[in-house]
Image (cartoon, rainbow, N blue to C red; front, side, top):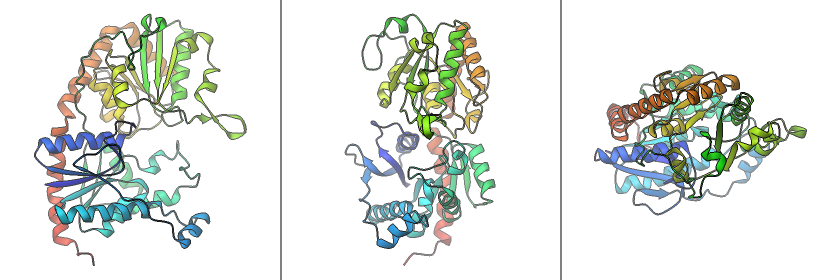
Length: 415
């Protein structure tokens, strides 16, 4: 089988992105099964025999500029679809493609399906309607009702719809009142954590840990400082731990777009929020900014307690990566997370937005290192059993067989 996949970047070494990470692991599993894979991307970081850089977006037409300025249309999805369809057709003519997998953003996958005679599989990595409570505006600052509608239309256009979690799949189909013929829950795969899991005397960058790091239990948080990932809740929980004299420090890794609360409607940045904390809390927090994947893996070697504090998540790779590294995990009970973590068995779940509950769970694991170790070991075993790239890829291939057969019988060739 020849399967093509879209990802924002490839191979994703420079920028952490869940779609890219999923693609990397799916490619590994499909290749292990002997299938051919082609990757389409707008950001080809380095040459790769299986990867194809998409063409540059064409210049805007006058009507498109006017429509965009008046808020009548948003042509970004159309531009993306045109480039993807052209590259798909080029590859397909050389080596026929059996199926193409693309995420749902702005409904571009549905537009691609209208342009090519290849079954397009819509992958629901993060439908906008599920995230709009914590992400009300897009990068243009505009209302996203058009984006929301386009993502729903894509379900009707594409040959099949998949999602990594049952929650997201059922919620999306219910919200759009959609009933596609072919749907499946296909979890995001992840390769096992291959680096030795042991204590390290250096940070991921190779620099010696400072004295306060050596003297404390460490907590790791990987995510943006924003409302969605709830970096504000993490910092508040750290302040509560400091008030109770719990001996713990935090490594915070991720970009800093900020949270609401600044002056005149401006975002409140990480440094501004830190000023709200007790001096002893500030001393215990190391902010590293965004780091590449390999550097983050360095932090995971010592199996730190890892926090997933998001107000909503679909199927976060930060959680899978922590579990693969045998880190004890505390995560919010939202979205697809409960489908990954068995509470009290492979991690601890707390309500989203509850800093007190998050701090309490941290204190519990810090005071009971044996429980923390047991949770981490069980988490790693679950990842190796249920989320290996080869196993998940096999399930994907089994699902695609009937989809491809049905598409070939019913599709009317494009002119």
